[in-house]
Length: 189
Length: 190
Image (cartoon, rainbow over all chains, first blue to last red; front, top):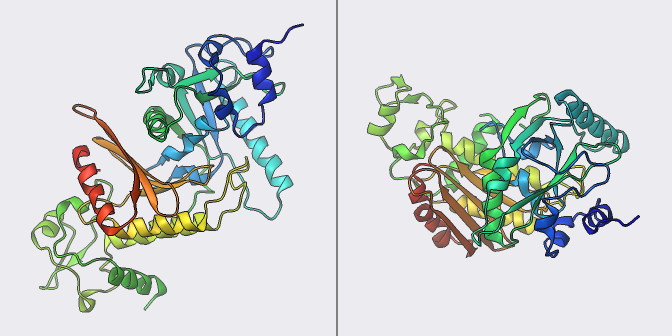
């Protein structure tokens, strides 16, 4: 059975910390965004609400009660992992996030512990609405479903890779995000 | 004298002289602290701060005379110190620790910020990049420390013409950092 190039790409780069850098070199990346890229996925990401688990308190500004713009920088390197709320309930997302933190803590005894501190909600319509100064769509949202998480998707900065566009991109997501604080007992001082 | 008070007094010595404290030092989120006037009466009336502006002297400084900006400055510096203690993998997903040079540049930039703009909030990304940002109803701006000596600045109006601007490769010197005030001016009070 022939594997689609998009499917192969995302399988090959599943754990690549520079996945988006590689994706930006693919001329077909905009077309890929319009189709499903995973055989496990229920389908391409349409107009939905996606949800990002936030574990690091360093991405949260307690004085302003908001995420920092830098919390969105993964869109430009390894991909901004989110859950599609159409295919995962809030409780499932929280359970998954809590389990990830627990697994990390079990493997990293002695290091500062991780905990799920909040959920960042974005509407895919808002994400895709951001346009680079060149006129290209800035973000692609790919349905990168995983065996243990069929609702997984990645938001990737595919329109440009300049410093200015990275600033513009994260400012856009920073403005559009709705942040839901879950944990309050592990905030930085 | 407590260690905290001593630290605040030391920082106040390090800050450039403030001949006047104008209203736009304060942001919407700042709390107005009690200020003891020469008549011994204290007040939290913000208009009092507007109309009776003079720099605090050593003899006037007590544990009650917290300079809001000094406290926030110390807080921002402390956050940068936290960043400097990070190790690779600090976010549990392969994040990079910031370099000592970048932290030092960030601290230097903070010290060079001119009077008349509010202190920004520090931030860090998984790439190890350190920066600052301002955000309110009228505008957004963020700074990225690019390397040991330079930074870039992005600004975005949220109202009116919604103009954006980007400046990069700015060397961190008191003179160049002072231009931040000019770049932020179109955003209103950030």
